Amino acid sequence: MPLHKVIYLSNNTKLYLWKITEDFDTLFSQVKLKDSSLARLETMKSESHQKGFLAVRMLLQHNEYSDFDLFYDEFGKPHIKPQGCSIKDVEISISHSNDFSAIAISDLKVGLDLEQLKEKTLRIAPRFMDVSHLENLSEEEKIKKATVVWGIKESIFKIKNEKGISFPNHIFEDDFSFEDKKATATLKFNDKEEKFQIQFDSVEDYIFVCAFKN
Image 1 (tube, rainbow, N blue to C red):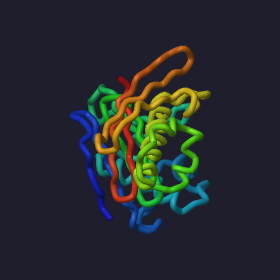
Image 2 (image 1 turned 90 degrees about the vertical axis):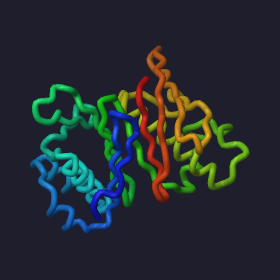
Image 3 (image 1 turned 180 degrees about the vertical axis):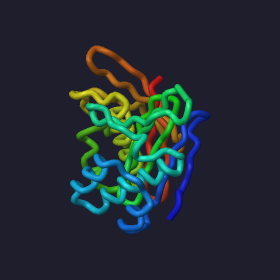
Image 4 (image 1 turned 180 degrees about the horizontal axis):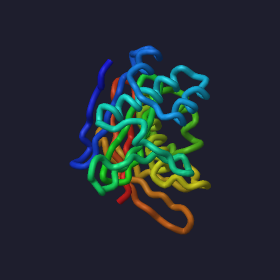
Protein backbone atom coordinates (compact mmCIF):
# COMPACT_ATOMS: atom_id res chain seq x y z
CA MET A 1 0.00 0.00 0.00
CA PRO A 2 1.30 3.52 -0.71
CA LEU A 3 1.50 6.31 1.84
CA HIS A 4 -1.53 6.09 4.13
CA LYS A 5 -1.83 9.64 5.38
CA VAL A 6 -0.04 12.98 5.78
CA ILE A 7 -1.05 15.10 8.78
CA TYR A 8 -0.04 18.76 8.94
CA LEU A 9 0.62 19.43 12.61
CA SER A 10 1.88 22.98 12.00
CA ASN A 11 3.42 25.13 9.27
CA ASN A 12 6.76 23.44 9.83
CA THR A 13 5.83 19.92 11.00
CA LYS A 14 4.35 17.04 9.03
CA LEU A 15 3.50 13.54 10.18
CA TYR A 16 3.64 10.72 7.62
CA LEU A 17 1.93 7.36 8.19
CA TRP A 18 2.53 4.15 6.26
CA LYS A 19 0.07 1.28 6.70
CA ILE A 20 2.03 -1.93 6.28
CA THR A 21 0.11 -4.31 4.05
CA GLU A 22 3.09 -5.51 1.98
CA ASP A 23 5.09 -8.63 2.67
CA PHE A 24 8.76 -8.41 3.63
CA ASP A 25 10.10 -9.17 0.14
CA THR A 26 8.01 -6.44 -1.48
CA LEU A 27 9.21 -3.80 0.97
CA PHE A 28 12.82 -4.99 0.83
CA SER A 29 12.87 -4.81 -2.96
CA GLN A 30 11.78 -1.16 -2.94
CA VAL A 31 14.31 0.37 -0.55
CA LYS A 32 18.03 0.99 -0.71
CA LEU A 33 19.91 0.32 2.50
CA LYS A 34 23.42 1.14 3.63
CA ASP A 35 25.52 -1.72 4.99
CA SER A 36 24.95 -0.81 8.65
CA SER A 37 21.17 -0.84 8.10
CA LEU A 38 21.33 -4.21 6.37
CA ALA A 39 23.25 -5.57 9.33
CA ARG A 40 20.72 -4.11 11.74
CA LEU A 41 17.82 -5.55 9.76
CA GLU A 42 19.37 -9.02 9.90
CA THR A 43 19.53 -8.90 13.70
CA MET A 44 15.77 -8.31 14.02
CA LYS A 45 14.05 -11.54 15.00
CA SER A 46 10.50 -10.29 14.44
CA GLU A 47 9.23 -9.88 10.88
CA SER A 48 6.89 -7.17 12.16
CA HIS A 49 9.91 -5.15 13.31
CA GLN A 50 11.68 -5.79 10.03
CA LYS A 51 8.70 -4.55 8.01
CA GLY A 52 8.32 -1.54 10.28
CA PHE A 53 11.99 -0.70 9.73
CA LEU A 54 11.59 -0.97 5.96
CA ALA A 55 8.33 1.02 5.94
CA VAL A 56 10.16 3.89 7.67
CA ARG A 57 12.62 3.87 4.74
CA MET A 58 9.67 3.96 2.33
CA LEU A 59 8.47 7.10 4.11
CA LEU A 60 11.93 8.63 3.82
CA GLN A 61 11.95 7.92 0.09
CA HIS A 62 8.50 9.49 -0.23
CA ASN A 63 10.12 12.67 1.11
CA GLU A 64 13.07 12.42 -1.28
CA TYR A 65 15.39 11.22 1.46
CA SER A 66 16.92 7.77 1.75
CA ASP A 67 18.39 5.46 4.33
CA PHE A 68 21.76 7.02 3.46
CA ASP A 69 20.51 10.40 4.77
CA LEU A 70 19.45 8.94 8.13
CA PHE A 71 21.96 8.52 10.94
CA TYR A 72 21.86 7.90 14.68
CA ASP A 73 23.87 9.59 17.41
CA GLU A 74 25.64 7.81 20.26
CA PHE A 75 22.40 7.72 22.26
CA GLY A 76 20.42 6.12 19.42
CA LYS A 77 18.51 9.28 18.49
CA PRO A 78 17.79 9.60 14.73
CA HIS A 79 18.95 12.59 12.69
CA ILE A 80 18.60 13.44 9.04
CA LYS A 81 20.85 15.38 6.70
CA PRO A 82 19.43 18.60 5.19
CA GLN A 83 18.47 18.31 1.52
CA GLY A 84 20.40 19.97 -1.27
CA CYS A 85 22.06 23.26 -0.38
CA SER A 86 19.91 23.82 2.70
CA ILE A 87 21.87 24.63 5.83
CA LYS A 88 18.79 24.56 8.03
CA ASP A 89 18.65 21.62 10.41
CA VAL A 90 15.85 19.15 9.89
CA GLU A 91 14.47 17.28 12.88
CA ILE A 92 13.02 13.77 12.60
CA SER A 93 11.34 11.36 14.95
CA ILE A 94 10.37 7.78 14.12
CA SER A 95 7.88 5.30 15.53
CA HIS A 96 6.45 1.90 14.57
CA SER A 97 3.64 -0.15 16.03
CA ASN A 98 2.39 -3.35 14.42
CA ASP A 99 0.62 -2.32 11.17
CA PHE A 100 1.86 1.27 11.03
CA SER A 101 5.15 3.09 10.69
CA ALA A 102 5.37 6.85 11.13
CA ILE A 103 7.84 9.69 10.86
CA ALA A 104 7.55 13.32 11.89
CA ILE A 105 9.70 15.86 10.05
CA SER A 106 10.01 19.37 11.43
CA ASP A 107 12.10 22.51 11.78
CA LEU A 108 11.50 22.11 15.52
CA LYS A 109 12.72 19.51 17.96
CA VAL A 110 10.01 16.87 17.85
CA GLY A 111 9.29 13.56 19.53
CA LEU A 112 6.83 11.06 18.04
CA ASP A 113 5.21 7.98 19.51
CA LEU A 114 2.70 5.65 17.87
CA GLU A 115 0.81 3.08 19.93
CA GLN A 116 -1.94 0.57 19.26
CA LEU A 117 -4.85 0.75 21.70
CA LYS A 118 -4.56 -2.14 24.16
CA GLU A 119 -6.13 -3.00 27.52
CA LYS A 120 -2.62 -3.70 28.84
CA THR A 121 -1.78 0.02 28.73
CA LEU A 122 -4.63 0.73 31.14
CA ARG A 123 -3.59 -2.15 33.44
CA ILE A 124 -0.09 -0.71 33.86
CA ALA A 125 -1.25 2.94 33.99
CA PRO A 126 -0.53 3.28 37.75
CA ARG A 127 3.14 2.62 36.97
CA PHE A 128 3.55 5.66 34.73
CA MET A 129 0.78 8.25 35.19
CA ASP A 130 -1.52 10.09 37.58
CA VAL A 131 -4.54 7.78 37.48
CA SER A 132 -6.79 10.53 38.87
CA HIS A 133 -6.78 11.79 35.26
CA LEU A 134 -8.79 8.68 34.34
CA GLU A 135 -11.65 9.30 36.75
CA ASN A 136 -15.25 9.45 35.47
CA LEU A 137 -14.33 7.95 32.08
CA SER A 138 -15.68 4.85 30.36
CA GLU A 139 -13.35 1.87 29.94
CA GLU A 140 -12.77 2.75 26.29
CA GLU A 141 -12.03 6.37 27.17
CA LYS A 142 -9.62 5.28 29.89
CA ILE A 143 -7.66 3.11 27.44
CA LYS A 144 -7.43 5.98 24.96
CA LYS A 145 -6.33 8.52 27.55
CA ALA A 146 -3.79 6.19 29.17
CA THR A 147 -2.37 5.50 25.72
CA VAL A 148 -2.04 9.22 25.03
CA VAL A 149 -0.27 9.74 28.36
CA TRP A 150 2.16 6.92 27.61
CA GLY A 151 2.78 8.55 24.22
CA ILE A 152 3.36 11.94 25.86
CA LYS A 153 6.05 10.50 28.10
CA GLU A 154 7.64 8.46 25.34
CA SER A 155 7.72 11.38 22.90
CA ILE A 156 9.25 13.75 25.46
CA PHE A 157 11.84 11.14 26.32
CA LYS A 158 12.70 10.87 22.61
CA ILE A 159 13.41 14.61 22.49
CA LYS A 160 15.53 14.64 25.63
CA ASN A 161 17.07 11.18 25.30
CA GLU A 162 18.89 11.35 28.64
CA LYS A 163 19.67 8.44 30.91
CA GLY A 164 17.87 8.46 34.22
CA ILE A 165 14.59 10.05 33.10
CA SER A 166 11.68 8.25 34.77
CA PHE A 167 8.19 8.40 33.28
CA PRO A 168 6.36 8.57 36.66
CA ASN A 169 8.94 10.60 38.55
CA HIS A 170 10.09 13.19 36.03
CA ILE A 171 7.44 13.68 33.28
CA PHE A 172 4.10 15.15 34.37
CA GLU A 173 1.12 15.62 32.08
CA ASP A 174 -1.44 18.31 32.80
CA ASP A 175 -4.97 16.95 32.72
CA PHE A 176 -6.63 17.14 29.31
CA SER A 177 -9.66 16.05 27.35
CA PHE A 178 -9.18 13.52 24.57
CA GLU A 179 -11.42 15.63 22.31
CA ASP A 180 -9.01 18.58 22.54
CA LYS A 181 -6.25 16.66 20.73
CA LYS A 182 -3.80 18.92 22.57
CA ALA A 183 -2.12 18.84 25.96
CA THR A 184 0.80 20.24 27.92
CA ALA A 185 3.42 18.46 30.00
CA THR A 186 6.45 19.24 32.14
CA LEU A 187 9.80 17.51 32.48
CA LYS A 188 11.44 18.01 35.89
CA PHE A 189 14.92 16.53 35.75
CA ASN A 190 18.40 17.45 36.95
CA ASP A 191 17.12 20.56 38.74
CA LYS A 192 15.57 21.89 35.52
CA GLU A 193 11.95 22.35 34.52
CA GLU A 194 11.01 22.22 30.82
CA LYS A 195 7.59 22.68 29.25
CA PHE A 196 6.26 20.80 26.22
CA GLN A 197 3.30 21.24 23.88
CA ILE A 198 1.59 18.02 22.84
CA GLN A 199 -0.56 17.14 19.82
CA PHE A 200 -2.30 13.78 19.46
CA ASP A 201 -5.02 12.00 17.53
CA SER A 202 -6.26 8.54 16.58
CA VAL A 203 -5.80 6.68 13.31
CA GLU A 204 -7.88 3.51 13.15
CA ASP A 205 -7.11 1.75 16.46
CA TYR A 206 -3.81 3.57 16.99
CA ILE A 207 -2.86 6.75 18.80
CA PHE A 208 -0.09 9.06 17.67
CA VAL A 209 1.47 11.66 19.96
CA CYS A 210 3.89 14.44 19.01
CA ALA A 211 5.75 16.52 21.57
CA PHE A 212 7.38 19.91 20.96
CA LYS A 213 9.61 21.73 23.40
CA ASN A 214 8.38 25.23 24.31
